[in-house]
Length: 337
Image: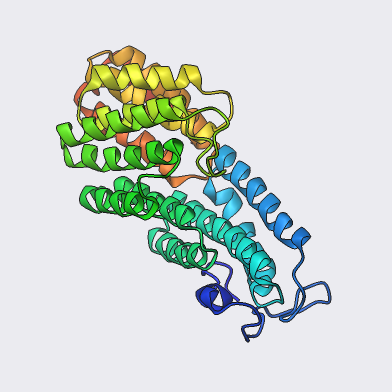
């Protein structure tokens, strides 16, 4: 099968349940490759989860371009045949849940390299799998991921709608951490649209929900990384989009202080938001120093989004192109290529 396409077979039939017919794709079957009708074990499902974490870490550190193709092949040759295997209802739900997570990540890595149509197809597959797993909350996470993509593409109205559908999907009894994540996603959509009041009120709701979240509360694994640093980061992005540069700088600085050394790409994005805010405040030299650091990191990543953050900053530099710090920045960046 073509490694670049979403696994169309079993994933599309996610709702069919165990034993759905269909040939394994791929030209060179070998003996270790899983065949349809094989029994799926708890170990198999745990392996899917572990592999997903591995690919997630790769994506965070080096960009979607590094993780994506191997992940797609893994989905095609391991996860998809498992869905056509033999399993009971309980294990089946766990299997569909693990496959949903891998499929969402395939979409996320595709989004990171700007393969947007492909990413959307994976997200739709992941929604179907979450449905088959009976996991509404995870379905809402996929919708939020789609909302984030809409923000990136500048489709603010769609981003808000997706975030709201996600909120309706989990209801008001969702763990506060989940609610914080969903309100933040909505805020980002409002910011793209320039809707200051709606954005501020979504951010306030997110803040209150985050305060209500007890440490170690029963939040699903995908929501647990959402913390004060992440909220500060998202707030910085919102204020940047609303051209409220003083607030954007404060939130971005706070996010960088709170965040550990992990999540390399997120730190890079945040540093670029801070650079943009400094530029918006007329602090050209400081902006250029920050942006040059981030551009250096971006050069080592296979992430179209990372490069786009740099390009966005450079477009904003145009009015200052004759300033000495800007010339210095351009020289530093030119040396990277």
